[in-house]
Image 1 (tube, rainbow, N blue to C red):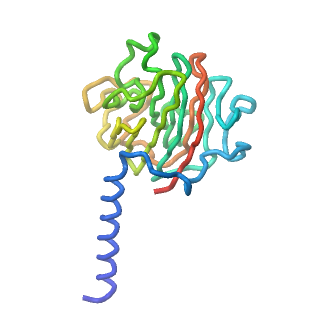
Image 2 (spheres, one colour; image 1 turned 135 degrees about the vertical axis):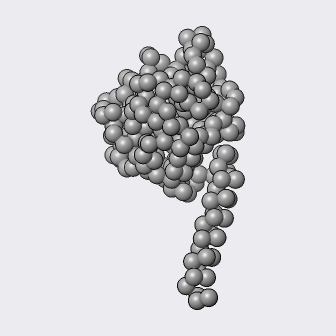
Image 3 (cartoon, rainbow, N blue to C red; image 1 turned 30 degrees about the vertical axis):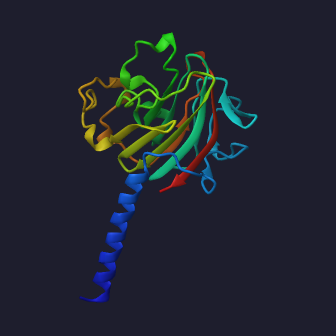
Length: 229
C-alpha cells in the first residue's frame, strides 16, 4: 500500500477518535473558557440589535424591550457557554442556527429560558420549560435555579446534534434529524405549528441570538463565550 492511502486512513481514524472524544465530553461544562471568544464585544460592534434596547450594566447584558440581539457572524459546529439570571416569571431563550433574522421563529431552534417556579408558567407544556428545546424537546429534569440566582448554560452544537448542560446537568440531547414532522415531535408531543417545518430540514449554520425582556420580565446575561469545534 502506498503512503498516501495509509495517511488517509490514519487521518480518518484520527477524525473518528476526535468525534468520539467530543461526544464523550459534550454533556459537561468546560473547566475553563479562558481561550474562548467573547460572544459579543463590549461595544456591541459585532452584534445586530435595535439601538437603545440592549446595553451592558456592570458587565451584564440586558434589554429594555422584547427584542433579540444577534451575532453578526454565522456559526456552525460550536460550543456556547454563558450565564443568565431570571427575574420573576422571566421567559427568554438562546437562539441557534438562525438563517433569517426577519423570520427567526421559523429559521432557528431555541434553547428555552424560563422561571419554571413562577405560577404564571405552572401549566405550560414540558417542552416549554427551562433547558429544553422550545416546543420540541422537554428537558430531562428541572435544573434551573429560582429567579434572582445565576444559572450556567453550556450548549454544544455539532451539525444536527445539540446538547444542553444547565447548572451541571445534561438536560437535553437532540438529533435534529429525528424531527421529521412539523406538527409532532418524536416522543409524540405536539410541536407548535408556528415554529415552522421539520427540524431535519433546517440549516445547521447561522447566527446565535438572545431574547430580550419578554412578557415584561427582565433577563440578564454575562460571561458569554463561544468556541468553534
